[in-house]
Length: 494
Ligand code: 5AD
Ligand code: SF4
Image (cartoon, rainbow, N blue to C red; front, top):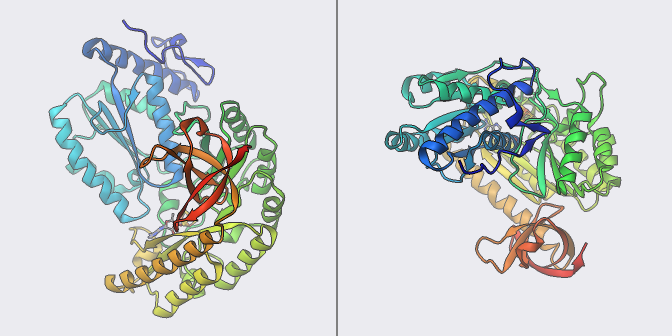
């Protein structure tokens, strides 16, 4: 048999070839999952013998950066099992890592599943799996059981670390395997990860959310806040740095409350100070910050840091103090604006981005104008604007005054225009400056250009070749195109 590309690869110092797959499975994690990865390898080896090629897998990600990071873990586990990874759904194994934050995220998945069903009919050996936030909803599971019988494996957010074991079960049987947990306090470290980028990586620092904003389904599908131990986070980042990663994005639903429930509590600002010391890491980003928990200590750390990017994502959700109360955000318009002023004073160059929801139940024109007022006053570099989506089980879904669609649409369009105006104005002010840029890729439309990101998260395209990817270089911003720039290399790489 041809030598398998990854058969000798070590996964976190574990050699899968050395695992005795005829012994009983270990009870400890992650050893148990490595055992099942080795078991699944038997399947992929047999597949290769039968088909003359390795089986191909596709991981489709929906949703936020946390999901994207989870998808990298799923891909890493599949690779360890001996699957090849491809970007197409015409694969031997397809897994959708779903999102449910707004209804259109769910609709996308139902739509794609119809297509997968057709493909699977022609390729009956194919296996289909669903995981992620949407699977934590009881009515979704009922619908899959009833109308999507061709799905082979369903699991949720709390037991994603068990993917290898669950897939092994699904490969052994023809019935649908479903394993959904209500919550967990468990965090399993050291599973394989297949990073999308060689030079930058997300790093989870906490999971779950305790805030219960009244519109949001996340606390119900991601469970209570759990912080990873600082030593596990630092160990992971050191390993990433040794592997060539220069930029990290610390991930959590509410990073500002990091460490509160650790055995030995630690603040997010303290964690950042420790990360700052890691050699090789040049840029530190984080998201998401809840305004109510953003401490003076954090602002001070941001002010003096050399590595924390001059970008802060600070979700506003609404500019109306009345609506913010209804949303259970626990800050008002004045407090938010005061916080912005404090941050700008400490980090003058900081780029601010935000999330805004339009059409929350009971939102009046006056409330909406308060939101527009904050947008104008803050002058965001960019904003994600969302139409309120009713999520079953959240307190806001029970509110009677849902806003008519045409009113919401009109407000949404007005908001978008204002956001674009602010964003362009902020960007134009940067034209002519020279900025440090992390080069990410060759430009998709024009391969004489490369594209990279500045610390403030704006994108710039400039002449260069793929040898620059992963490097931080100085680029002069020549022309502003609203959301992005054209530039040229300014001197030598840093
Ligand atoms: N409807 C619309 N937008 C929502 N978000 C969260 N829940 C909803 C909802 N029910 C938005 C918030 C959050 C972002 C990730 O998604 O703005 O910050
Ligand atoms: Fe949802 Fe609010 Fe938690 Fe963000 S902080 S995940 S909006 S409940």
